[in-house]
Image (tube, helix red, strand yellow):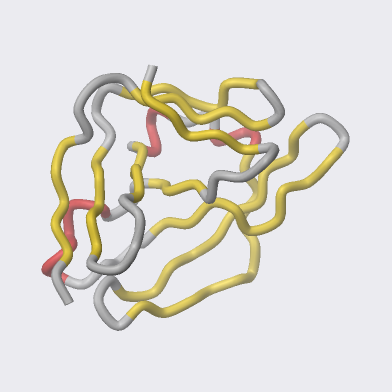
Length: 112
């Protein structure tokens, strides 16, 4: 299993229901064999007031334990669509404290 982490080129934005949750020119791109690349945003570039920590945790053998957040957006809650590795494995230490978002019909991650 190969994982590469590189600086995501350009400016990236995350939106929930059209509302901008954050924008960053300091995002990271995590490229993992067999998966689509994932953009990780620095926590300081995200409006954390819209995120609620959930009890969900998952463990990746390559990255470590992920903590999840839900988003309160316009009369709906997007459950467990944000994750973060608070104490990642040493080989992916760059993503510590960064946030990744699961894109869908109501949540977009895109380069602007």
